[in-house]
Amino acid sequence: PRSPRPKAALLHGHFPYAEADPGRMLIVGSYAQRENQRFERLSQEAALFLMRMIYTAREEGVWIIPVSGYRSIRDQEAIFTAQVKKLGSIAAAAKVSAPPGHSEHHTGYAVDLADGGYPNRDVTQEFVDTEAFEWLQKNARTFGFELSFPENNPRGISYEPWHWRYVGSPVAKGIFETARRRSN
Image (cartoon, rainbow, N blue to C red; front, side, top):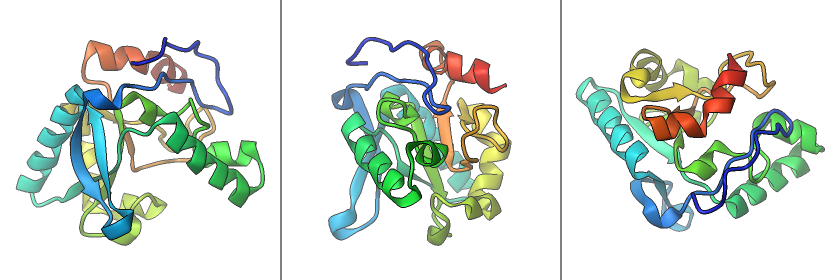
């Protein structure tokens, strides 16, 4: 990480995370087309395990695609500001999006996943009705991934079936240690 580890104080249900160095990440895929296309990146460790997971799923006929990986604090600020404008308050926005400096995406160890066969279900609750989600529920742990925001989580954050974090190593577990402990 580029900045020191922040204290583990909650902000509207979200913990702070240091912003990782994007120059040390690997591209794990691209998302969208033409002027909206972006290249998704993860930390090297998380990227390798994600790729193993994606190709294992593909061998079983399931098409998992990364929709959003590493996100800078600046990028998160734009996303969060749009949610505040849409929903009318910081508290309401924080139920569906992390405030800047508090997104797991800043770490390079979190990724939003989708089913390539159902593009209209990307980053929606309908993702639960896809083969990709079903496969992830059964197999993601084998590759070190876990769902960050399950239904009825104690932090009060909306259920995000698409949002997975890598916790398959001591470094990754350490990054999310407080969040994992306070989510059970």
